[in-house]
Length: 297
Image (cartoon, rainbow, N blue to C red; front, side, top):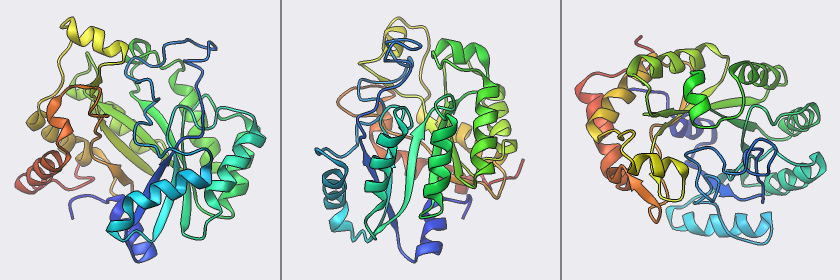
């Protein structure tokens, strides 16, 4: 074991593999509804990073469809995951209805909500705290980078102190916090990426998701890619960079993801990321060959 993976943590806690079921709550986000913009973050596709969310007219139907996908794998326990767009962005009573429906089944052991740090007003924080007493609630915050120049380029729409406040308020309420970091953002050096990882390690968050920058053909990032303004990482480069990030991650922090795969229908680059098995095998082999251990640095 080279790192503290979420799969191993959940298996130890529940005695079996726990599957995450991606749901679509019909959300939008401030970068799309005209509040801050209309085109979204520069890397975000038309599905709001929810390409793998289940389809269905309501939460119960989506849960059933998502469970059916993993039925052959023997899935018995699940995490309900509102993944698309900003899943705390809406009236609190609508959020309550969606979240409670997702948490209702006995085989759903936790709720996970993907959102932005600037979309956690007091009533939503109070709701998350209340629900966390019933079943564990995870909030996944899209930080991506701590560097302001990059944040402006990707049209993130908020500054770093907003993230700090969100983590502090969530932890004060006992809610689990997971932070998304993108590796390979245009213009960022290895040193800058590790500065972001170090910052996350000091933030008080419980977990981290490392995400490879991939380019989808329905994004504004694709326009810059085709224009030759940046290049994406090769697989071997990514494995080496990821190894450094894991070494810089505190040993107690749970690593929820080592990479990410974009919707193949729209994936423009890097094409190797579409082969998930090869990607993970290469990463794990690199970790083994280079004695990578979480928290070494």
